[in-house]
Image 1 (tube, rainbow, N blue to C red):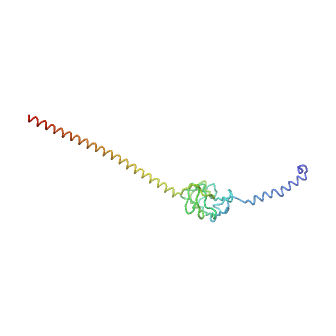
Image 2 (image 1 turned 45 degrees about the horizontal axis):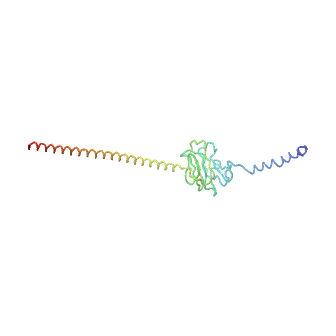
Image 3 (image 1 turned 135 degrees about the horizontal axis):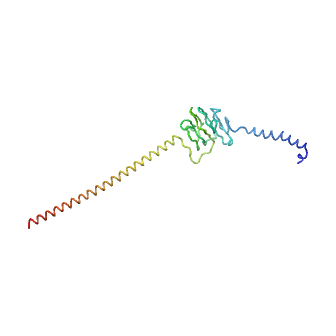
Length: 224
């Protein structure tokens, strides 16, 4: 309040603010450093393809992420990089997408392409490579994560094997249904044939009885 009433004090307050407060804020911001487009951060490091893939620590140094070039924009063609996750990362979560079958993220020796989602256990470095063709419009993002409760992501090979197994099971069910249908048809025919044979035997027995009766009547008539 004294500074407001005294012009010299006001000048002194403005001078102190300019001299101490603003430089302090600038120093804090400078010390924080950038959080995107990094070569290393949070224990992760781009060991190959620097300037293509990059590290981001926008979620904190305890939760580093790696992103494709220009993420979340279109990924350029013919790019590759390799990411060292350090010793403290055992699981990562995947986000975004790549060109199915042609552009791969290789994690723990397995290739992932297409829609990226879910958690993956990691061993060793992660590698990215894209071919010469037009890329998808979203790119990908990998972040450090904890072990997921359920396995969400499915590799292309696992999906192929699951669909193949399901197709075989459907074929077996159809074959079994066909066998049962044929068995029912055959059983019905056998029953019909048995009934027809029984009816034929009854008719033959009646006919034979009628012949014997006729023969007896004829013999009786001759005897009379």
